[in-house]
Amino acid sequence: MAHRSDRAVGDDFLPAERQLLELLCSGPAATSERARAHLASAAWGGYAFDDCQCFLIRADIDGDAPLIRHGGGPLAEADVEDESGSVGMLELWVVDGLLHSVDFIPWGDDHAELPDPERHRITLLDSPAQNG
Image (tube, rainbow, N blue to C red; front, side, top):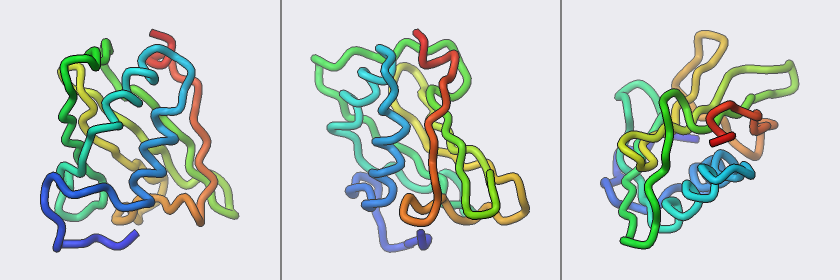
């Protein structure tokens, strides 16, 4: 995915960003169900860092969506693989009960691009945070 500077906070997610978010919110736990409810009205919140495509989430939830009860650490994690094997970890973060950000932690030096769901195999991991 290319880093775009013409975006504004509140814009829609790019299709690949939406795919990553839907995968990270797809777990069976109650926390994932709440995350999906937040995602329904969430928007792009800007880039987390200047040199990275990791992005913030602007979570504008209505009064019916419960806060995500979460004790810390990433809410969801996914392993990212290409043809050579695992290349990094994708994480979904929650702050103060709201979706906050998507981060990518690569195992190598190249950390500028988020994984592309069309070119990478992304597998949601069973995380202790998903069990709450």
